[in-house]
Length: 501
Image (cartoon, rainbow, N blue to C red):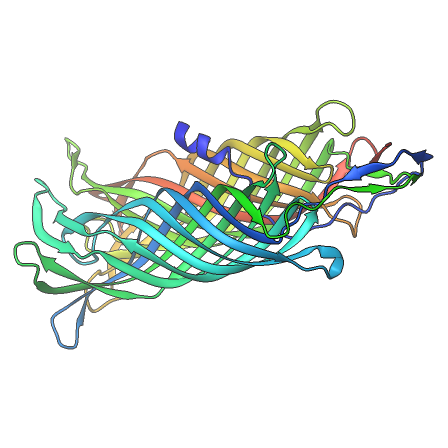
């Protein structure tokens, strides 16, 4: 947990284009001339950093043939972990529209260790599957919220490499099955959103943060014999999805150099609106998420004994969210730190196909809702732009799962189910919030959130009677979400405060 907290505390969440708040202003007398340095975004750069990610995949087992015959229904498995990244790219800042638009092209490479435990459907085998690297090339289109702060969308082509997976039997004594799946590279596309900020500690140094979703083409992986490397006659069709957040430092080698400071003549001072962040708010929106879980099957005994190796399953999907909270801006108006407390509720449909180890069944497992209560600590990068980290308590509910047979003919009820269950845990996140200009009090909030839940035991029950079968599954769940919402603030202090310069 400490490593995750350290990693996430450096991640400011992905962003979307926004504008300064449209707030009332007052006019002041003439002020002395002042020099303003404008960041030049035209140029090339190098960068490096790291992040965290999850992957899910849909796996179907085939055997015999030709043509291949389905030997196991589709199940959803997955993995998670950390990665390091390096990047190069070039941007061009358009003079039109006030110089606020930036376009660019880039390429990056990730050194990854996103691990999960693969259990091929319909087979009595299990093995560690790891995404070890990925690379991407693409473009981005950005909008300058301020001369030093860029928000953008990105898209492009990507490939991800998964290492060789050695399989063992998933029942005691868990010895080698003398089978493996080859190392495989998957091809696909990605979309993302992020922000980049010019730091003032060193000329040319920037801080970039990005959320990215990738989808890869389905590929066939032959299960091979360890002794000879020859195909065993059984294969896995896999379609993979990857979900990452990344943070990196960027150094820019601008073609035209830094834009010079410009000196403006004396005249009426431009009043600078300062948003009052002290107050309460309500909000609503939506997002996307993935979940992974570590599942281990037990014979309930007595004594209770482990009945299978652990396997990683998972799901993915969309969510809607509602939120309420209150913030307090520390110090006088214009102070940079904000603290707050909040609660939210998610209406979700994050689905995966669960195949408990050594249980002859597969079922649709869905995370249908979640709620959270926590606090946040924020820093005002601009008077109308808050970046923050959040942490707190959360619970997630997974619906009842009814099982059908794992082998052909598919869809036949297996007469087994697991109950609806609520899991308890904690979350940590990072985000940003912007004051919009077209309605006073309206803000746009975006947040990435990671949640980990306590291990829970789920008895497998008989559909006809509801009685336990004597077999149960221990599950530890993790969720990984991104969310965007509109927020309306009811400020205690009466709205905007205007700074005098």
